[in-house]
View 1: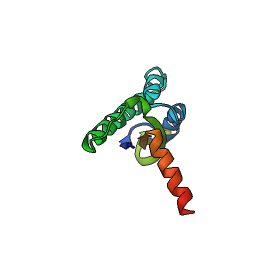
View 2: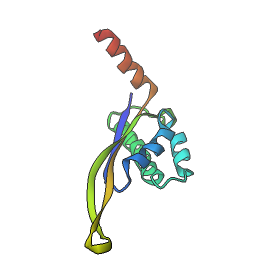
View 3: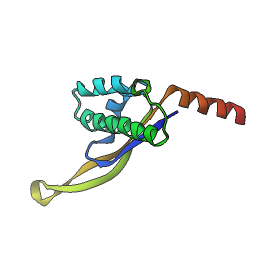
View 4: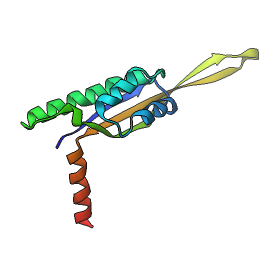
Length: 130
């Protein structure tokens, strides 16, 4: 019934570290994912927590606009992925006049929440098209 998307771009977390965090919540219910992220020790868990909370709020707004009922306990993380953003290149002085490059990587994180009936409808439409 409801599918909501939330994205954050150019966040100062390396994609490799962010992927470790999103692996914890993939396929989980939205509120369970929030609980996992709240107590995860990784630094990337805070922006992902905010992103999942934003996706829940987006689902609530989308349901209100379409005049449909939304039980937030039914929402689950249908897909979540991290893409590599732009890399900030900085230089640090080293011995004998050399320069050492430091790459400060950024990420684009996307979270998609859906209700179970949304996924079933997509699956049946794929079967009907084949």
